[in-house]
Image 1 (cartoon, helix red, strand yellow):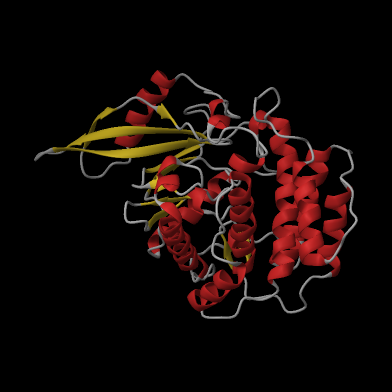
Image 2 (cartoon, rainbow, N blue to C red):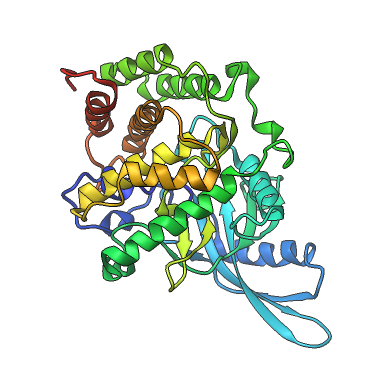
Length: 376
């Protein structure tokens, strides 16, 4: 799965487009000569492989469901003195400024987080290597294994076919995998580089400031009163005693997880929005995004907020705090993000409308913050 909010499946297109067709026109087209990239990757891998000689790198194949990541799958074949074997790999390139979704790409940070989590048995793809020299292939890139399984994005054929019971199993298995990440201590993983003291004294302050800067960048002076109202509310109603800060995955949903045939989560993907903060940030994003997607596609109800919160508290080993605040925070972040998504999808069929995120945010503010009468 690509790096980027594939909540866009049901959100950027609205609820009118046939599901899945929005991937026909991705935000980032092919940016390089793939034959040259293939030959360069073979040499690059050879220098990093410790068990055998890289005999061949197969064709680079685009992912059909990507939005921000220029991402290719390929097969690498190795030979040693005893045998030949192969493995499926993925290369991801850093987006250029013309296709940059976020205020900062956090490209190297994503790789470092994934590598750190792998050492603590969190279900992430095995990192192969990171290239900091953009001159090698025209952009920074990293290579990782292609984890087995299918994306849990609602609307995929296999997710349609497994029925409500199967989808509920993916819900709980996906949350259990996410809890493994949340139980990690960022200090023990040496993830202090995610701290942004220039934006605030604690992770929530830092994230609020980040998304306010992001809003200023993407809005380019065009006012979005609902987003501004939400930001003011989030500043005024910050929980006085925030939960313990840990690692925030960022784009927390089944669409950024892989599942095996028995509905077990096999991998967590996409750390483009990684940050520090309490687990509530991810849990609220999961609930807000998953419910929006289900509603947009006409799916039956997912497990309830109450059921999910209770189960997740057991997985974390502590109570979930101030979920209403973090639900508003999730809708606020998504509304800002969707301004940029709308811009990037100019000329594409399933672009949506410029203030779709504002409309959803207004509904969330009414339900979770008691702020009514907002006009979009």
